[in-house]
Amino acid sequence: MDVMKKFLSFMRLERIALEINERLPLSFKYRYIYGRSYLYWQAFLQESDKWDKNKIATYQLEQLKNLLSHSMKNVPYYRKLFIDYGFNPENLQNLDDVKVLPLLDKETVRDRLGELIDRRKKKLISKSTSGSVGIPLTVYMTDEAVKIYHAFLFNLFGRVGYDPGCRTVKFWNKIELDRRKNLPYTKIGNKLILSNRHLTDEWLLKYAKMIGEFRPLFITGYPSVLSILAAFIKNQGISSLESNRLKAVICHGETLKDWQRDLIEEVFNARAFSVYSMTEGSLFAGECEYSSSYHIYPQGGFVEFIVSEGGYREIVSTGFTNYAMPLIRYRTGDLVLAGQAGCQQCGRNHQLLNKVMGRLNDFLINREGKVIPRLMPWIGVFPNTKQYQFSQEEPGKAYLKVVKTQNYTDADTLFIKSKLAEMLGPMKDTIDIEIVFTDEIPRSPSGKMNLMDQRLNVRDFLKI
Image (cartoon, rainbow, N blue to C red; front, side, top):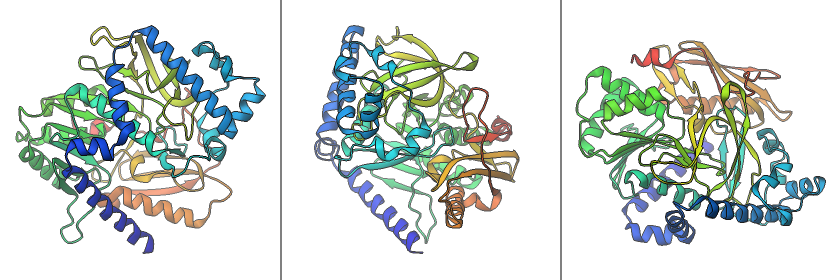
């Protein structure tokens, strides 16, 4: 009960903070809340947006050398690694010189977390991620790195005319429910915030009506959630969303599939604009004003590609913005089809990604045939687990396979069950999830260990 009280108290405080934040003038927020780092990076990203290739290469080499020198002096893992490899950051002559160092995989980050942090940095912010590979990670960053991250996102959103003061519908995980009214939505300033967890037919109908009445300029959310709403609107023949005001539907947190893009654009009569970024802060990318190819920001880090199967390549990233926990030559686990270095349509000299494989089937199907999307944001990182994977072959029943650490106890099982109930929300009684323990979770032929082994086709249940 104490944990639940603390959680509800936190949610109330978070909502109050959001309300205050939304009511403040943008000029005040930019200067005093987002801070100098945010303002600097907003200006820098605009100024460097269309640098030529030589200027980009010079900048990246300088930033890489600075990051490596910092890591040598202040991060125990890299200090030992550089000594073992006879590597001196001061001798770096070009970007390829860093390739003498080994790749950094997620297992190493998880197992040697304490050695990868600059302990001089105080008040670090922790973020949990699993991505699509089922390996739980906690990463740390400074408040400055978080503000830089938001500078990248708002710069990217600006390509379709967005700014933080725009009238926006936002699908979000963290919604404080009014216990008396049990309402999974809230309105704060110019933001209508809707819960990702309440996607029953009853609430989808209410959401559609609320969005139509709110008349937003933008809608943001996970593609899986937005496509569920779009499919419902289409199948129900709802026309209340027709509005000339809507400029774009901004999709983030997941890879936007071609069929999802087509469905969202058909229903909302606006462009589906896709963002690709990492919780780890080591890569920022998104579409431009004209193209659906992802443009990787060269200001945010240095990217390499390693060959995988089926013509795909895995992204290896070295981020420039998080000195508290540098990730150097980090294997992201994301498979892509790399494009050319430069976009002819917008003129940016950014590396293009023509396709990101991303999460293939990150959803569950309940007994009623309803889709439960996007598992990870509601779960976070399970304690004392090495890996985990959901699997499903029939509606209404699924398994959670868990590889335990030596410290795993029955209390951890209870915690997992409570997080699953929180994740499922009003759908918790419509699906049975059995926890099973295993010594190993096999990887796919490409070497990837997917978070979800889903044998059902989501499009069959969306009826599109």
